[in-house]
Image 1 (cartoon, rainbow, N blue to C red):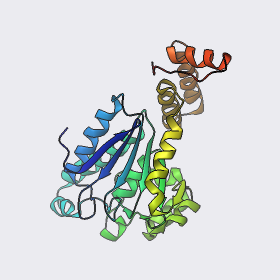
Image 2 (image 1 turned 90 degrees about the horizontal axis):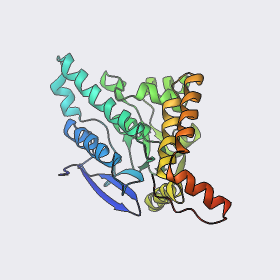
Image 3 (image 1 turned 60 degrees about the vertical axis):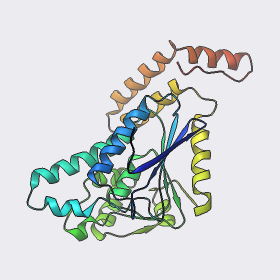
Image 4 (image 1 turned 90 degrees about the vertical axis):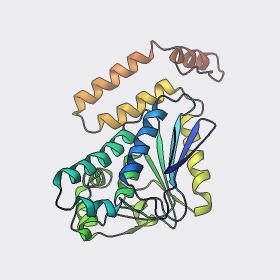
Length: 261
């Protein structure tokens, strides 16, 4: 795949996506399309079992490309298309069947914070700032920010942060549950890699993918529907080679050798 806006590397089944769109890693339409294609490819990549998203340079992602906003003024259909593409990217990341970690190395503003909120786990550098300042542009968050922020925190917090356009420090973001961990800039990537490895080491991707699906999709479903999904995915696993290997390994007091099938 020809990549213009990101750098990708894979080590020990962890794929790191580094946004590299100087000067501020803005999410232009072309960048969003590239990310969507990349995540689609990684879905079926056997060498990828966990994914880390981070930014090159000082920024994680400064936001959407404001120059494109200028071109959409007076054009409702173009603006709608931009919002649909941004929402689709964040939805597709959230729906990944592999854990996705945002390693927030610097400012994550507007669409950048919305991208991070689409990931399953968020680690922030002590120097990171996070916020949704769209109201200062006469706009609103449109990549899922009005919805995910309230679910990750609560309705009152989401209203306060969006209506004030307040920028949070990493520690403030951790206090409200927006990020799960804050580390020094030097420790960010190695911590993200360690967390990714802890998610996948010694585990079967057949069970990891179903666990992620049940948690993510079940969150918005009625309890009866989400419990039905959980029962079905549990029962399906008993037909897999990995469940047989995992159970036998436990009985035999040895480490399992999963084939991820």
